[in-house]
Image 1 (spheres, one colour):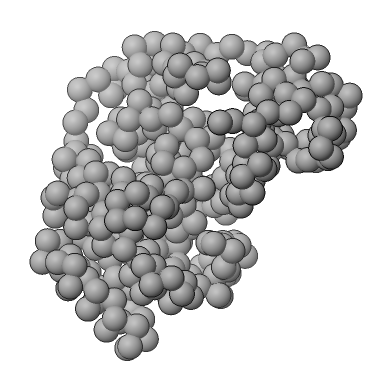
Image 2 (tube, helix red, strand yellow):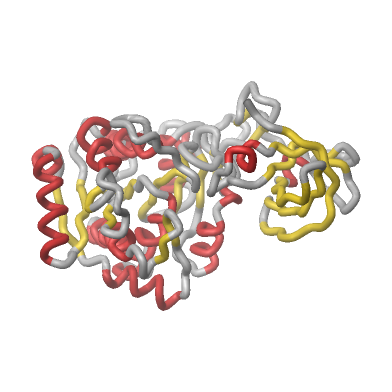
Length: 356
């Protein structure tokens, strides 16, 4: 059950794009709460606000702050928007968006009959943080390439929640963005992953696309109950559209949990059960004992037989992240603390660049 508290805005702490953070006073003390102006409208110090505190009540890490549902003293959003496609449907937070493929869109005609990516490489990740490595791996090998990002609704729904996407765009590693399903806030809003991919190629002029959920994915320590299971069908979607699907492995030697150490079972299960068509699985060049473990796990899971395995050097992409000063983290671990995770991502970017 969701938790709600009423409080008063004390001060604005941060603002970027369509996201504003406030300090809010409640009967249980001061909290940090995020508002999305396109849904909330403006909020000023002293305004009474209703805050969803579910993440705080559950003690979550990612998403463990309040979200302002409504400003009781405010006027609401200034611009109701022009689109008629509704995201977050049948919830109190449903909002209309101008979907790129909708009849009222200026891009409708360009997308009406498109069913092919004409070989465009599509890299699919199970972790949001790995999009940095993928983009850097592509740019290290092909600096001219326009890299698009498609965010699914498997994690955070507002694109603005991702600081990483902002940073990657500011450094020129990612260009156009699209949000599909109930995710929102991309340059292109799309109904599903198929139209998100075709929009990024056809309208966004991207040469390659990286696909991943937003921050805050879910796992349950069960065989199938994790957000990253979506990577299998997403790889299939890229292949069905005549693209070149590339799987980014979740590889870590810093994660001591047996199910995630070496190659995560999330990657293995999604490729074994979720991906029904062949794709290219990118493997980074690692230390000999690490390389042997990764290859053994892929062999044991039948991945090497079901898919095409390509080994690539992820070091140039990781070095690009360091040169640009882009800070990445996963489960609280930095680039230096969990280097293999981003070596795997950069290797996937390198493989994609070779397919251009």
